[in-house]
Image 1 (cartoon, helix red, strand yellow):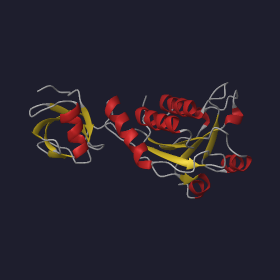
Image 2 (spheres, one colour; image 1 turned 180 degrees about the horizontal axis):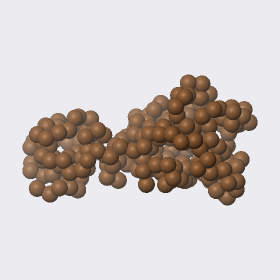
Image 3 (cartoon, one colour; image 1 turned 60 degrees about the vertical axis):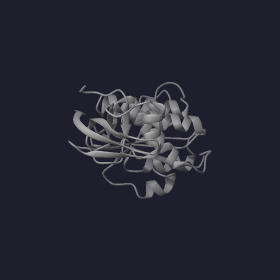
Image 4 (spheres, helix red, strand yellow; image 1 turned 90 degrees about the horizontal axis):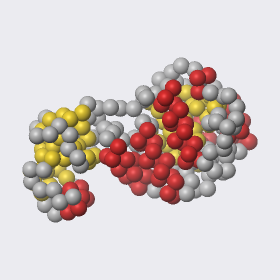
Length: 242
């Protein structure tokens, strides 16, 4: 049996040696209808907690199936304790942010409503599905939870004392406000604003917040989705696991 199967699937079922894994109707359709697998085929499984496992198809049907875990192919690789807070934008670009955050090692994704947020609602289940798909495709063994949309003011009011907040402030474009100036710690969050930027009241509250470190993302104004990728790359290369 090969150590790494080509098709990867996230399952909400504990994985381990000899563990049988039942498939949902959607998963069975994907494996047996779309990918044309049959009994004896290998699939890579991960559950977000126990690494990646090579499993064998032991039952294959149109409405379900069963896989059997054979051996662990890769250990669990959990990301740094990093949250990404962002204001939802247009649908396709919000999807992009969630997908790239999952690929780049965010541990939790929190859409926030700011004074200038264009969207007042999200499809949390759809965004969570994008995070799962991103982890399946990029070889990750962790899927970050995507939370429901919540107001930034309320989130800041309940902010945990032990978590540092990296505030990507568009008013600092071109400045040398760097992540290296942030205090030491192992619990972090990155905040990306909406397309219209933060309001004066929000910027004042963020600047005064004891957990906040305001940083610049370089000499150019970035789109919100680009800013999210840039901030995650900056953090991972200086404080994260890159």
